Image 1 (cartoon, rainbow, N blue to C red):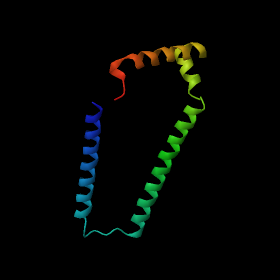
Image 2: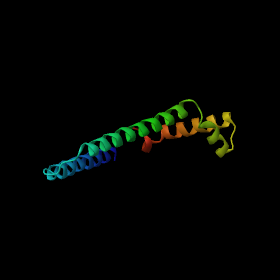
Image 3: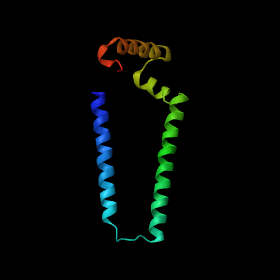
Image 4: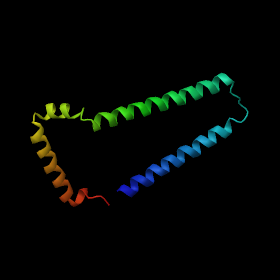
Length: 102
């Protein structure tokens, strides 16, 4: 199952690259002014900055326990009960052959 997903994802990436190269080469006679290049560069930079910043906040929040209070309120359990519940679920998943990592 995992191998099939990896192969499918790689196939999609290869297809996207092939399509992008084909479209890019089909635009051989079209020139973009410097304003277009500037807009393209700024769009890429700001999009990457936004994605990196949001992922950094996700990791920061998860590592510093800011999500725990919300999860405990949702489950209605005390911190000790929550950890006990998580441990039992981890043990069940570890012992279940369907969830073993290959």
